Image (cartoon, rainbow, N blue to C red; front, side, top):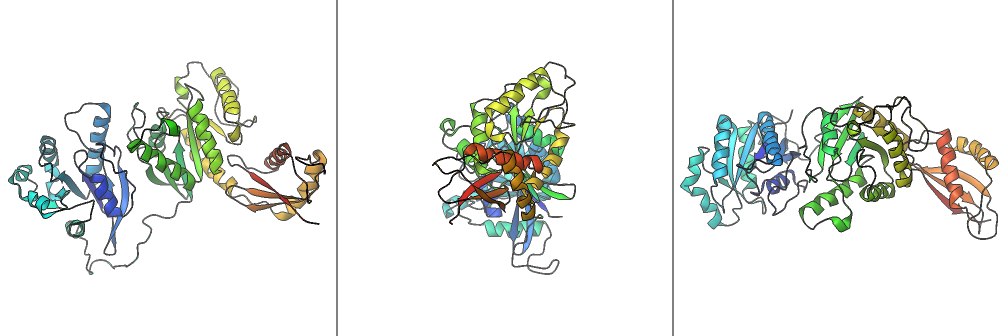
Length: 471
């Protein structure tokens, strides 16, 4: 098991910058706005052939009593219990602050595994500030000056960290390798939890994990950074990513919130399946429609998750929950009159996602949450489904007999010569027709519906292209 190093400190002392420097990537958002990091962000640091786990925590502002601040303190206390070593980061330029003196008292029980580090020491002038006798009040020794921004002193800090952890970095206790190996197995499934602000994405992640890892708050945009969490489920390695709530670009203010949203879009591109969380109490709005369009455009697998189902007052009716495509999914739970109305909203308001299964849940109570991971694995399987060529050859005449091809543009009646699958993730098919012919879009939708009728493509879009052949 890898040793864990936790970086703590008050707001805006450069914790995220140091975290990014140690793991050699920009996983944490760096901003001049205090409190950018609100949740625990984890990464792997490779140094001289050995790895440690590094945890970046939310900035502490002792004295504040708001909900977010209480949750951050809760997160930090949890991280300290799991830490093998604590890096207490301070800002040498600003000097000792009252909140740091208070935090140092909290760290005294962990004194033997705490290193005091002074950041923003880019020049000798700033490095000399580490000799200020006021730092001795913390009873944690003299700060070790570094610059997370430029990398000055970070190598020496890493040597010290590995010394504290009793990891021999010059040979001896462990074999030294020259190339980094993946700290975790390659994920079999990447799930992005997507939704507008304050629909319960973090609550859903916490309920899936059974641990309050991500701060849950009624304040929109509590989660500003994508949160990577790995778990094993049914012998599959799954990567779960809780993302910042997405707004329309026109509503995004410049700066920190925009940076989080940009990362969310990038994460959607590299995910396999999106858990698209909508608010069951407020229903579908323009932000949901905008986000659905983005998911559709990226061609990702998707499960529509209707959260806050417990807040709807009417008791369940005996009818099972209808699927988004008009069918029914056995065992999906019960629906109420409000649920039927919401299903109509989903069907008409999100027309590009009619292939997506709909699951009604309560992230607060856990109702329905246990269905999501098995369903996501099924969606992944559907995205990778390959239809043998011989089966497509047998099916094509049946499709044409049931509904003759209709032309799009021009006067020539289209003749379909063949249909074949050319790709997966998402499943992609090419329909070959004669020269100077075309197929109407409605007929392409017909072909998609027939493919879904014969094969399980639930949760994944299907792309169908038309190719004109010569002769």
